[in-house]
Image 1 (cartoon, helix red, strand yellow):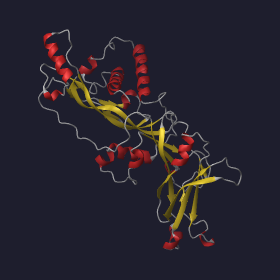
Image 2: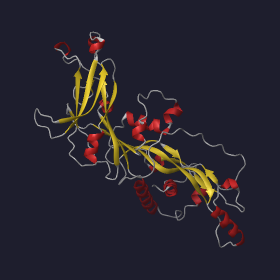
Image 3: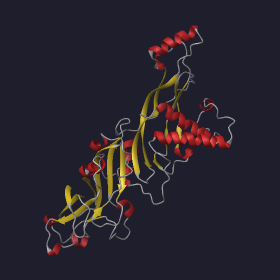
Length: 391
């Protein structure tokens, strides 16, 4: 599990190193004064220290190096919408243009969602490079998302309702293809009507689990579209799947190409849970020096990470600061040990007072591009201070 206090301290120090004067509003003065050894450092020393902190933070995020996305990197709309649903942003903004339901079953067993676009110009077989999935990430499910186009209106008008059904079959390719020969196994199938353009989702978990858990060869997936009333009159008149070949003019291939989505868990922290945005707590008018929560907004652009972190642009991390006076009041959320320590401190100054520390932490979700230009939605534990107390 990611240690929350350590994570917040690393972010705090990174922001201080990047320039106190430009971002004074982000870090309160008392927070800066509590970072030892930064004053008087040369630019080279500060840069080296910043690199060390960046490496530590990347390690906490499970990344070996800082991602540097290429210009061709594309963020699938599905994962962006999934982040908005999962984080509560869609509900807060009153967004109603998300055309799918939140995948409760898949997300409830995963803390990481990854997206892989189809690579290559193959018109029948779809290939997905899953080599960027870490060995310690255990996949629980996977889905193939295909965008289908409706039949042209002129053709559709001549098709009766009983002739409007089409079947889309998705297969796992079991052996290396030979010319004119494809050995496959059916994974999922769906009946669709001809009169709508939309995304369709297919369960391909058995194949993906074989490729990742059992390390069997990945020969890709094959897709077949059949007209249920196939006659010479209907030849070629079926719904079309977005592939890399025969694209329509103006078609956004980068967004409409086949997408493989995996749901996994690396054993760290809790699964993804759909959250609602919390209203900020009201501050009291009276200035209180006792232990309490203070605002600390972390802007990823301050550490130069806004090029690979897609969302959020930053988040309210908060921090704990204040006195733990004798006697400790009930609202200071103290433990029995802290109460005893404070009592002893009142008669013996050699024993320190109880400290103001986070007592409750919550997770945030991040959508980002990894070192391989793959899009990842991940849940990170203990990133936000929810409560403070004397301990």
